[in-house]
Image (cartoon, rainbow, N blue to C red; front, top):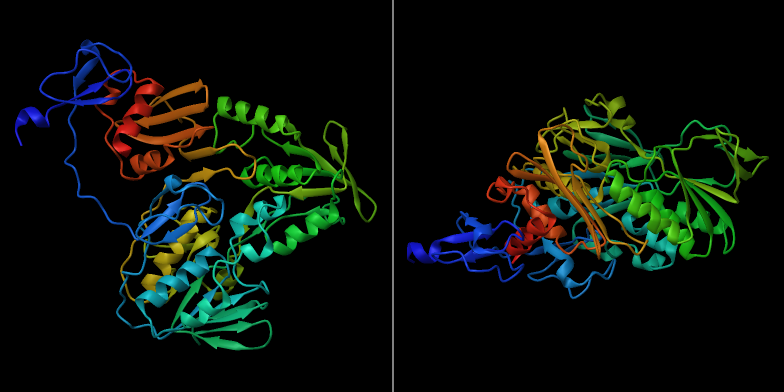
Length: 501
């Protein structure tokens, strides 16, 4: 191929890349003149990868297959909203050293650990212990269940037969009382003991209940399990009044789900804006306006003084003395890792169980993953990292060497009917960051750069380039050519779209 054909030029207005010996007279995308083009050095084109796993960008469902499904079975997103997912999958091969493993937990980290462990060590006997009495299910779909969009039978991750097919014995409806590392066994609440060669702790987290007077009254709920969701639905009917405390992702989705059921919802957030960790002020203001438009009354920057009532909740009193009538209160103010078993067993625990890049704890034959694991000082508390960490823990328990190097925090919003994708740094921390933002018809876009790399983004309304943004951040794509000037949002979007093709 000649040098002339290899040469490329980038439009500094919209990011269009032109290939040829000279820039075009005018940009075919935005009409900019040839003076707005500059030489563009392209990285060598990598061979097209063939993926056997695909991740839904809306709900994080992972599909096994050479192509994505026509639509997501969880959230109905079309095939175009899937991206290749490079998790520890069927090609993981262990050394066969593990013949008996115990997995504590029933969430996605535990299930993905079983999947990867069985793939790497097909003959290993696996015991999976879950406190819930039903089959492990998609916990991220609980708010869609609250909204009536999916039914209980749609929630399980796998049918019961799958566990037998994968050499996994389910112990449901019981909990682990203690872990004996020297004796290599776990003691169950029902009096049984299960021995192990390798142990994977994926015990998840529990909801945090702030120390608010009246928090023990009937009608005050948290939502972590399907039983919690059923209890909340039983407490509020159409026309009933519910106060949701917490303006994070779960609080917003719970409020939106109840509003769809015809419940009168008031959402309280202690800081001055919604989603303070995921959004900047402008995006939060747009989101708040949208939420208010759904009939959900939003109050930010407020503090709750007490939950009022006799045996049952009747109102929420704020610090300014205002009282909000309530038939129910749903508290979504974060979670705390279930790390007490590990602490009592003598494993290293900070806020969560401390793990290395192999998801190994301070004991060489014990691994941890998901909401209970602390990696590099980070507790992710998110579905995608939990799935990925579980896969790593399961594969490594079987003798592989799969490293988890961390991943940018990414959040999507369901139920409300508004597409939202936030990843990485939402608000620049100091002058070493550069950002570009724009509110336009169809959404709001915000991009944060540091040096030559994209480190964060907010896509509100139009999230069609979420996969391209994720890839650019995770692979540390070089934006130096684009950042020589002051790129507009249109230029950044054009650059991302060009590289997504």
